[in-house]
Length: 414
Image (tube, rainbow, N blue to C red; front, side):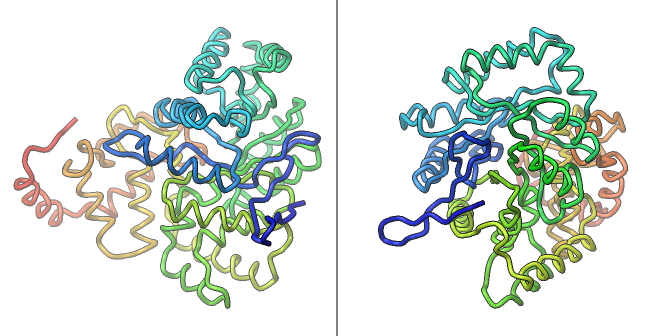
């Protein structure tokens, strides 16, 4: 159960709870390091350092990263931040074995060694098997000796707690959950995914087994926050207390007593401050019937507008043919969320190569299907890309933007 913390002046402070019984207290808000601020295509280290430190000073002590985030630079950035501020004994690192890249036993140790080096640490507090989407993927790791690896690392102290992250069907989640003595797990959970993936049933089963739960994608890649359509904002505005869509989404998750830590991929100062504010004041089972009714109505609005349930996690990337899959789906959804022509302009810009690093539209897709094998949402990506292209492409607008492009200098093409 969450309990509000107060300082000596009566100001509400960060809340903490034990993700694992008889273990350390973790901030209910965790810092997701998958979407750190960038500049010229790379992590903006100065800005990232400032934001990470601000969160730490406000009581955030759980930092989540993974082998592929920012092409490996997320782990490096987190390691630098910890070392620069001499806070290794004051924070908890969560990192993940890229299970989907393991094809032979020796790679397990190799990946782990690389992660320790990137993080510049001798141990990882919370270590997860990354993206176990079926019992089969877990069985493959067991064949490669993962159980012996975990036992040895826990005995040596290089791994403090063991868990797994999951994107897949509910029944597969339960199988994995019950197949090993896990200490914690990480699932996607928000008011649009209440019954998707592990869902509410998985959340409650983990709680029954005494397995801690970390929630990822609480804002569905931003779709439940800054990208909220006007209909959603209008519905939330009907409530007597004015709150942002992100505030509502986070409050809904923390209203569940089974939730331990909620990860947020924060890279905007105002968002970090707001997320911390909500974390400080929301306790389980505190939402009123009126609040819950508002969220239920918002769910229906989103369901009526969303074309593709993409969270922007980038597991489908990179496309070998240059298609920016998450970007296209974002524009496709935005067309229906917001209306207007901006989404179409953005899409055609990528089609002719005047935005970003070159051409990256859906018409480059060769139907190879590689992306669909890695999609946590099980989206039929190839078909959705075809549909997105039909909706967003416009020959007249494409011609107009092509003319504009001539005055922008040579464009970079792949």
